[in-house]
Structure formats: C-alpha cells, structure tokens
Amino acid sequence: MASSIESYINKMVSVVTSDGRIIVGTLKGFDQTINLILDESHERVYSGGQGVEQVILGLYIIRGDNIAVIGEIDDDTDQGLDFQNIKAEPLNSVVH
Amino acid sequence: MLPLSLLRTAVNHPMLVELKNGETYNGHLVSCDNWMNINLREVICTSRDGDRFWRMPECYVRGSTIKYLRIPDEVIDMVKEDVMQKSKGRGEVRGRGGRGGRGRGKENKRMKIVEIRM
Image 1: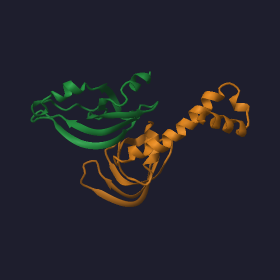
Image 2 (image 1 turned 180 degrees about the vertical axis):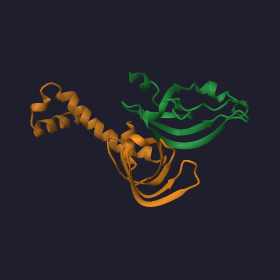
Image 3 (image 1 turned 90 degrees about the vertical axis):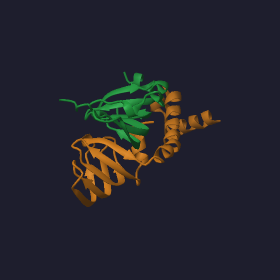
Image 4 (image 1 turned 45 degrees about the vertical axis):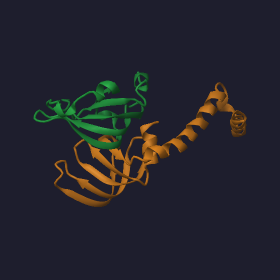
C-alpha cells in the first residue's frame, strides 16, 4: 500500500487536506499513518473572485489524520499554468 | 526520512503547531514521542479566528489533535546525519543477523558490524 507513496519521494506533490486546503511541496518522507514531510511547501489559495494566491509555508509535517488526497505534480505542466487567471471556488472541508 | 525523526530533530527549535480545531501554538519544542505528543515552552496560543492570544510558559499537546507542524527549514538538513547513521547501523545488524541473530550476545553483534564496515 504505502509503496505507492514511496514513488512520490523527492517529487513535487499536491496534498488536499480534510479542511479543504491545497498544499504543494516536495515530499521528503512519510510513515505508516501517512504523516508527511513536505519541503519548500506553499499553499494555493483558490478563490472565485481573483487568481490563485500562493502562500509560502516552508518545511511542514502534516499529520496523516488530516490528509484527504496526495498527487504527484508534473513540473512542466505546473510551470505552464497561469495562476493569476485561474479562478475557482475553494474546496469545502471533509464531511465526517 | 520519517516525519517523527524530523520532529525529534526539531527539539529545541521554534515551531508552529496548528490543531484540528484551528488554534495555533507557537513555541519551542521541548520533547516529543512516538504518538506525536509534544511539549512546548514559551508558547503563544492564537484562537481559530486569529484575534485572541494567550501566552503561557509551557504546554503539552496530544498528538492526535494536531493538524500540522511548521518547522524551520534548516532542520531537515540536520536530520540527515544522525538518522542516516542510526538506520544504517540498525539495517546492517538486521540484515546480517537474520535467523538466530537474536539469541546471540552483544559482542557477537558488535563484531559483525565491524566486519561489514571494513
């Protein structure tokens, strides 16, 4: 199971947390409870009215309880995105 | 690298901890355990809405209530040395010892490590 996360190590990943935030950073490590280490991370704050705001966060340990989705980011595609002009409603938090 | 190894390395460093209820705690890490329970000192607690603050000399946070921890960037470079060394040692003992390794005395195990390093 966890070996699929192994393949994301040292890659740029996007993490969706259960409070609806999107955090992007380099995956440096994880454990059996899916606690993650994200290096050089930033939050992408989406809003309906204006472009995506990127907030620098730095080195983060995210507790596994709080993680909904982890996905690898394709650097080339990501660099081609025009965040100033991407408008989207922010995600809601997970409903338990 | 394991998240808890990084956390252990961050002892005595400043950090920001956000709890699942949205409160944040800023302080220096005194200690932590395998459940991510942590001890902080010289703490400033900020309410969920960010407009109320409490200062306290120390606090203990149960690991299961944590959402995330923000740690100074340089800490990740400090893990490399000691964790790598530890896991290397452990791996070698396990790898070589394999079957029956447990029953043997300490001296035997130590000799094996020396052997491999040479």
